[in-house]
Image 1 (tube, rainbow, N blue to C red):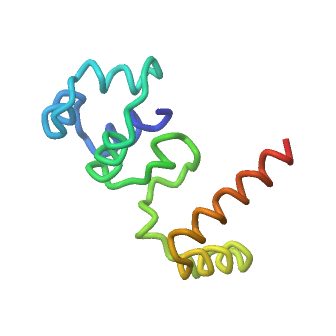
Image 2: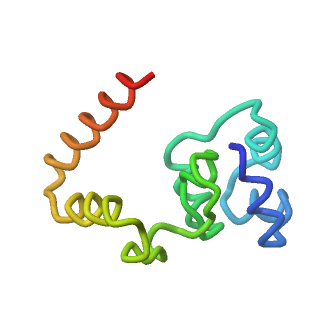
Image 3: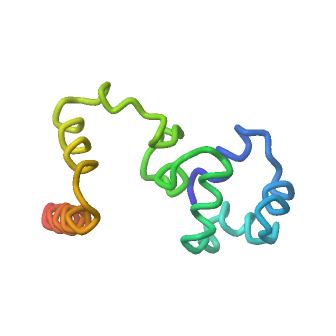
Length: 110
């Protein structure tokens, strides 16, 4: 959880306060920040929501700590905008297909 400590400190929240507010052990927060352990999905969602950031930011997949719902996708480059806009319009089953396909393409590039 590369950016958990950064965003926590940016929000002026102590490990203790975060742990208390989310009903997580302070030792767990410390372990997440040091990379000794990782939260389960539900905890990861709670952390992102509480810290008003994205899961991708917490995991170090982006350096933008703005939650996705606050992004203005129209300011993105045209190809990124087009793919995001199309993705949003899909039903859940088709979104799963797109995710699977995009992950397959990324694996092929390695």
